[in-house]
Length: 449
Image (tube, rainbow, N blue to C red; front, side, top):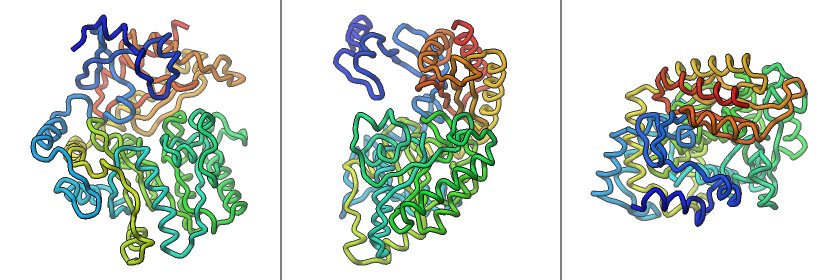
């Protein structure tokens, strides 16, 4: 292994980082993380911090989950890889599909299609939605609807349904036929409505209006995150997703619940859809499915879609889609171990308890610091602070989060700066002590402005 001087000298020189400017990375080199244990990370200089980012929304069980590590090691010694394309399979994906159908059974899910990660899962769901309508003789249903501020990965389809210009503008033109409606974002919305329930109704009405404008018979699916994540942790009113479900069903439009972040317990429920009492047609999952230890994802498919595909013997039902690593046996072994440990620890309880504790702490910081315009959370361990230069005018400040992030890290907590927001998605095995460290570190960050 190269020494620390070499690593620091070469940091960001030959490597372009995702979601970053190459020039910015050279001018402000990223933190070199070299070790992790429990809910803490350690950098090249030996500085330790509570990881309030949870890797990237995905290390739900922390960095010391030995059952998952052992499952990966054991599988590498038995069957390190084989294709799951037509004609071959492996024992681990057969078992995992059974376990996931049970885990997501209360959400109405019945089949699994395995992928390499979240963006793959979204792309797969969009494709299967179009194919489903072709099987049913409605080939004109090709459009997609989604929420502004929503995030659905970086593949061409996912970028097209994304609701944030940062992930779209430099890559346009994108997929045609993708249209967006306002998000139920109480702090900023075109209706100037701060009441969550009234805003939910206005956004649902906007969905109805867009369906009428586009023509219901042209729309394949509506995709949404049950709680918007990368767009700033935006939880809707509890009535919103059920209204979307009813509207979609009435118009023959599939509902895709993007659970890449919200699946496997982060919201304090086993899925985001279940949090709101909704049974979607498909769910895209990834991230915490292997605790972030191996790139893997799963699209979960409901009974209605399964019936359509499995009862059609024509070429229309042939799935001409997949990835080299779809159903990777090592990823599947990791997922099986992770799912078992997730259930054993019943992490939804700790997610809810520690999430409430952290949310209350952030609200107290808002009372103390004028630069905090909004605090969002209240549903497990998904939280955000929105920074403003003027609270009265809600003037967003995109430089402030980076300044707070640096001081917070120096004071023992890694948080994520994203636009005007500071995002938090720590491991679900977080302790109360960890929560207090995060709050104190953020307090130091805002106090240093």
